Structures are given as structure tokens and as C-alpha cells.
Amino acid sequence: MENRISHITLGVRDMAATAEFYEVLGWTRVESEDGIVAFDLIGQTLGLYPLEKLAEDIGLPVEALGRGASTLGYNVRNKDEVAPLLEKVKAAGGRILKPAADVFWGGHHGYFADPEGNISEVAHNPFSPLNTDGAFRWNGY
Amino acid sequence: MENRISHITLGVRDMAATAEFYEVLGWTRVESEDGIVAFDLIGQTLGLYPLEKLAEDIGLPVEALGRGASTLGYNVRNKDEVAPLLEKVKAAGGRILKPAADVFWGGHHGYFADPEGNISEVAHNPFSPLNTDGAFRWNGY
Image (cartoon, rainbow over all chains, first blue to last red; front, side):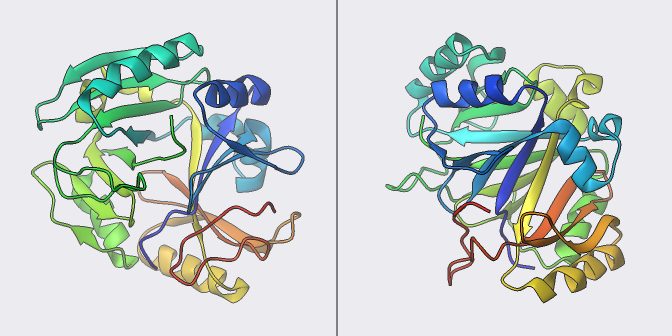
């Protein structure tokens, strides 16, 4: 198994509202087939899929999907980009869980939830700068 | 906001067991600081972080993190790679939720849960072949 995640799929209740939330944040949606909304992350896809269909596809009851704790992480190039981005999230209908603040490991970050409760972190990591193309590579904290 | 996810963080209860699960599957762990286990996904990181600490970092009670439905997706180059990979997952202590099977959209896939219940899909998508370097780009179903 190679180190790779090809998709991140969010099982959502309100497809239109959730898709709009990510579009308002500036994400480019790709043409997608009926019933799925896809955002091309360059080398990866974030997909929105109706919760009931996702549960059916996996073979679990919907209730069983409220389970683990995971977050999506979006890194920015500079510390001063974190707070404005969280403001934009709030304006788009997201909920700020943690306002922009310095973190114990030396970075600067905040957390938000999308309208369905999926949690994302917005972070600046001075020890793992983004490449010029925006790609991230872990260099430790 | 650019189309990018820099990290995927899983909040876990048993760090050692979960880390071992992913290592047994062949994932390369990177040197990481105390209290976090990181797997470099090339341009992205999958991080394991203690559930209580993740909750504290976000500012929510642990109970609030059992919320949305999300899955991680790992794509393979050929259809006949799906079933053997799921066997390997099972041998590593994962739970097969859906055995390898053809899917309505023309692909071939299965689902598994890691020891903590985080759900991943293993898929072959003939319409979105992996690049030679293993990177994925969405071309629709």
C-alpha cells in the first residue's frame, strides 16, 4: 500500500447548502455526475455524497457513521492569513470553533465546522512551509 | 481559498495500535514529535492524534467529535488489486465492511474500518486512472 489518499468523502444531509458553503470559500467545483459534488484538490478529490447513500454504499446504518474524530487541515502561507480566512468561513455560514491563535507547537491556527459539522483546521506551520505550488510536505512541527 | 487539504487528522483512543495498523499496511511513518504520529502522503499528511488532545485543541468535548460521516479513499491501479488489499487490511486487524465488488458507477471497490472505526474505501476507478507517480485526478466517474 503506497502512502496516498485519493478521496476524502463527506457524507452530508443537505448537498446544495454544503456545496455552496465550499464554493463561497472559493473552492472550484468540477463537473460531476448526478448525486455527487466533487472538488478537485489536485491529486485528490473532496467529494460530497448524501449521507443515506454513503451509508448504503458502505453497508452500515446511518447512525453508525457518527463515529470517529477526524479533521481536514488547510494550511496557509503566512500567519496573518488565518484570521481573515476564518472570517470568510463565518460569512459563508460556518461556525468558528476556535479563533485564530498561536499554538504550543509554534504555529498559528483555528478551527471551524462546516454547516454539517465537519471540522477543519486552518493553520500556518512555519516549520513546514508550503511549496510554491501550494503543496504541503510534513517537516515536523 | 485554494483547493487544498494539507492534513487529515484522526483523533484516536489507542495511538500505538492505530499507528501499527497503518504501518502493517505498508505506510511509511515519518519522524514525529511527542504525541503525534504522522504519515507523509506526499503533499499531505495523515496524522494520528490522541482523541482527548484533539478535542481539547478544537475546544469541544470528546463526545461532540462523534459527528459527521467521512471516509478516506485509497485508489489502486487495477481492479484485481482491491480484494488482496482488503485481505491485507483484515490481517492487519481492520474490519471489512464491504468486500470487493463492482459498483454501479463502473468501478470496483470495498470498504474497511481501522481498529478505531475510521472508514476507508479502496477503489479502482477506470475513468480516473492514477498518474504514473500514483497521484489521483478526478475525471468524473
